[in-house]
Length: 514
Ligand code: XIL
Image 1 (cartoon, rainbow, N blue to C red):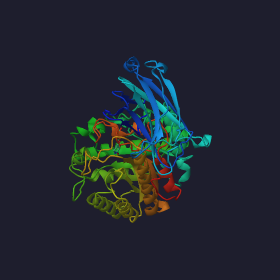
Image 2 (image 1 turned 90 degrees about the vertical axis):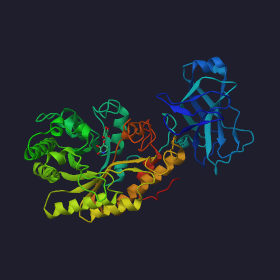
Image 3 (image 1 turned 45 degrees about the horizontal axis):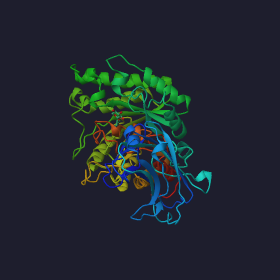
């Protein structure tokens, strides 16, 4: 379990997530960990089943555990009769404990109030307790088992979405890894395969089709890993959005380009060779239906202009001419593949969007081939506004160009907000999950409302599970803290409410946080 829990009890030092589940320091009576179940729910006669594992110190302290269910919001109404005595535990060994919610006074009113369920330590405890999974089995019927927002293999939220891809007439994509991430490798991770094959009909390589992966040294193209990735996709009836032929980001511009000392004209030729060799290769191979030809060539200034801190710009003789040359080379290599310019913040930085539109207008006036614009959309729960997103997409639609959401993720925390870090959300609660569900729905709805069917290039999410998001890395805006929870699936590949929100929009349902 990796989200949806918090510490409970006076003096609690909080909870920690780890590879086994969620742990707390049992440093005193009534200290424990809880997770929320949103109203309305009827827990009467429900059975809470927990798998727990205690440290040797806890065992030696002779302390006990008390699983419980409690109305949230100041009331002590709840089930307090359950008990798991110390004799049940062996240090370091998983033990299943249960609690039937059958309190004598039946004071629960779960129609109006949320409930928290959890476990607390009793009788002068010390040591560490780890909760590995929790299941709540409701009395009514087997099918109505719990909808706890926290994640575990056995206690899951179901978004009731058979297949996201079947709900849309345009591509529904996910960014996935191959050799760039051994853990989340689509070719070897069975859970990754299952979720991708179920919900997506397009894949983007998170990294391995970027420049330095495909042409690490001049003239030496290495297609092996990317080809395996494409082969897998095609075998599963999934197509590929190619990403990205040119991107300035330092870590993956090949050294020979970064250190170019030849003429600008020869540099442009090298750019064209890179683009045409790759587009040719995948035209022959099949499976790649579109390309981000140039990624992030505009800066974030006001007024915005072409990025001058890019090797492409400087080595082209301090000129943005490499952009149009890349589009021309891509079109010459494959007349049928869809060509995108891709960037971030163009949904929120008006100056940047203005510069983008200026470039599009110029390209169209000079017949530079371009089919659409990729909106990365690494966004937050409250920013940018839907109005801003729609207005920006409309500007591209008004040019007759396609709009593709290429890298969607909705981070729960916004480190650029005024209140940061005081506003930091440290626990992915049910409330947060449902707010995110609504936000996903509103973004997809804005896309549908703004972009006519013939210009919809599709929507791609930048990753599958919250565990695999790029926003947890040490260099991310969260300094390595895993507090973005930005994707559609939790760390264990369970549905999140966000998946329901995405589907709601595709199905024309109202966007709600319920
Ligand atoms: C990110 C990948 O997800 C990371 O694994 C990598 O370390 C850095 O790049 N915009 C883009 C993507 O266009 O290529 C970036 O992908 C995320 C931001």
